[in-house]
Image 1: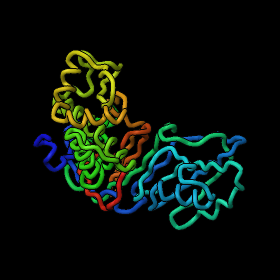
Image 2: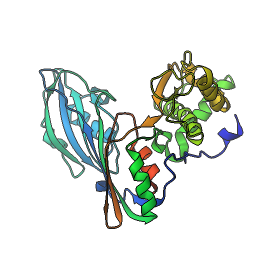
Image 3: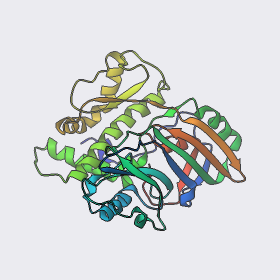
Length: 330
């Protein structure tokens, strides 16, 4: 392993819009982070029940487990579009496959944390990433720093920010990266052992995300993260999600990506061995309907993002965030 891999994980990626001129308290209470799925599942006659739920202070997995328990089905019979924050107020859809089981009284799911908004029958299970995206309304409290400089950054956000994977992808204190380091190192040393499925999934996701962020960070430093460079395989600037198969980049783009990822070759080899296929991800993220409003010492931001992207990628360009919660964020 390289010295870089043995060092503590640095998740403070380079900023692109001039640097955060302010700091603010983040997630002081759940209502400071409001998320609404942009989704409209269609009702129909079928063996699935679709439920729209608003939750506060609960994570998606917990709600899914409670639905499975109430319906008397297996956990994997419950579907949803994506994981949502625990320390937040979020509105999202779930599906429950009942097959021939009787339908329970869904109102029994309600608690201080869970509110059922509506439900109806549907024809299929909801799957990750199939929705249109998420709408966010986020309050940053007790803003300190240069507001005029922050305004200059805010005016640039709609044009795009670096599409980094958020810190939550890497686990508490980079714990998922530690797993990736260990598993790839064991493979390099020829050790074979059975890896728990959930640990392997977290490690693979973190490793791919880390490699992508490394490439994106290098492009941000070179100030060409929005530009098409020679050998770009997409119609917009993109970076690798590593896996098995040929990297579709060529020329200068391929040389850059291989150079950045060279210290992480054991990770690349491990991801290929795991059977993941090469994919590409845009380097730029454009928030839709971005609005910023000052309320005394607070800054309220509203915007929408596509699935698989992170609100924190937007927030970190605006402010240094002092997280007041200990929950993972997405």
